[in-house]
Image (cartoon, rainbow, N blue to C red; front, top):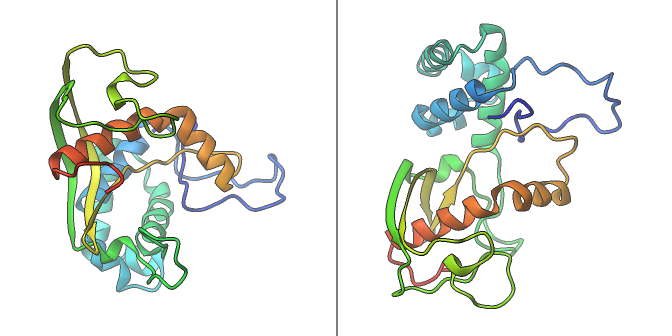
Length: 219
């Protein structure tokens, strides 16, 4: 997490001026990003749905113990832990549509993802001419490693995906982000993803497809 990063699940109050915005008790920086990532890696997702508020969830002994140990490891002040618990609780319990724009589609939350892999590692060679991928967000049908930003003649890609899970017969990948933005409109979020994370998304989508032997990222 960079110095300008903070939770994305809770938006700033509309119409507030810069000077009137409350100071977020959770500090910015790489340590906070690592803290949130590690807590999300080990926390029991199902436990979040059993409590009707982040405050009640925070004092649940397994959650409280993990939160405090992880915070101490990464140097996060105790005063910031209620805010961290709030962010994670809302993230896990948030309902959204997954895999369809159909309004009749049942709502999904991460607590529903029983089949999941945290910190999934990948390692694969490039190029792999047995598979052809369209560069995400690009016109045409060039292979992904020949797209803009890719200048690899031969080599390997390796990394770790924060979370991969299965839902209704499809596999999804998720990467935690905690950026602090001036607003969280769909347009602004799309701009940030395209500006900073599009290449990462392409690599992760390709890795997931290779690992699950899907012929195309769209599948």
